[in-house]
Structures are given as C-alpha cells and as structure tokens.
Image (cartoon, rainbow, N blue to C red; front, side):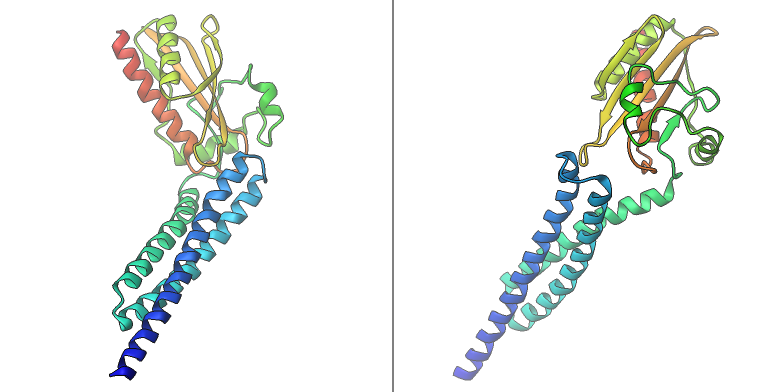
Length: 259
C-alpha cells in the first residue's frame, strides 16, 4: 500500500510538472502573439518584424499543443482532475493562438494580392488632403493601374459606384455622417467639391488605411465612388473591400433616413 501511494504521488507530481510547463508555454505563445501587434502599434518594430513574431508564436503554440497532450496523458494516468483541467486549458490557448495567424494567412490567400480598392477602376478618386501623408508611406498615393484593377475585378466583382436619388449636398451630408458612424477620422470634408477624405485605424496592429469618397451629380441624383487604400503592406487581407462595402451600406441607410 505505501508503495502504491508513493507511485500515485509520483505520477501526480509528474502530471503537475508537465501541466505547469504546458500552461507556461501557452502563456508565452499568447503574449508573443499579442506583442506582435502591440509592438508595431507602439513603434517598437516594423511590420516585417511583427509578422516574424507572429510566425514564431505559431511555432510556440505547436510546441505547447504537444506538451499539453503529454500533460493530458500524464494527468489521466495519475487521475489528477486539476492537471487534466490545466492541460485542457493549455491546449485551448495553444489552438486559439495558432489559429489567429493561420486564419490571417488563409484570408490573404483567398483574396486578391492588392491593397488599394475602389468603386471606379477607370478613374479612381484621388487623395488631395492626404496626399502628402501617403507620399511618406510605402504604398504612396498613386493608384496601381490596370494590373490592380484586373485583380479587383476578379476578386471583388460586386464593388461598383452607388447611385442615390438625392442631390449631392444631401448625399454628402449623409456620407459624412456615415464616416463618423464607422469611426473614421475625417481629414477633409469639402462639400463644394464633393470630396471627403478620412483615415481608419485597425484595432490590433493599428494599421492606418486612407479613404477618399467622391460625390458627383448623376441622372436623377448623385453618384458615389469610394477608394480605400492601405499605407503599408502588399496585401490587405480583404480589409479595404470590406470597408468599402460597410461604408456603402451605411451610406445607403443614412440616405434613406434623409429621404
């Protein structure tokens, strides 16, 4: 009996040790993943370094998953419910930590490899007030031309100008309200020119993407064109297309309320 108790105690100690290691690795992988975006937002490193940190977080999450499985086996043999719970928690954290960068990679592979989206591929709205800011960033202000347009047509065939049966001044007011509703930082709002420029900041990395809205008279109302472009990065993971869709939907709602 004493030998049985000693053996059981030894199994419990081993299970607790492996579980503690799994939990420590899980915490480290989670902190590493979170620091990738936080460090970029705070200016500690550039975007390439941030993505390298994200990849290392995935590798660490993989190691964590292996140790968590070993902890589950050891905890099961020791019949230590606390260790089983800890091992399961480590496995869940590892899965979540690894899933985020993998989901981002899959998203990048499922959308066109572009970062500049517009509803007018022939004559995209141009940045005026934000031009100087964009010229200091890697992606600058100029549109990429026919090659980018072709990729957008293939990947986002639904994006098109929005026609609203209201005069431009009323549509412009609705556009400005829509931009504020979406949380954009408005840089310019020229109702006479029908041009609104703004910046939207992503939540995690704090990437700044710029938007220009152009409103011109059209038959029986107004035509609205939008352009949303990232300042950094070759691919936007579909963010700009989603932003354009969200703006057009919000603008339509605002216009209906005004109508």
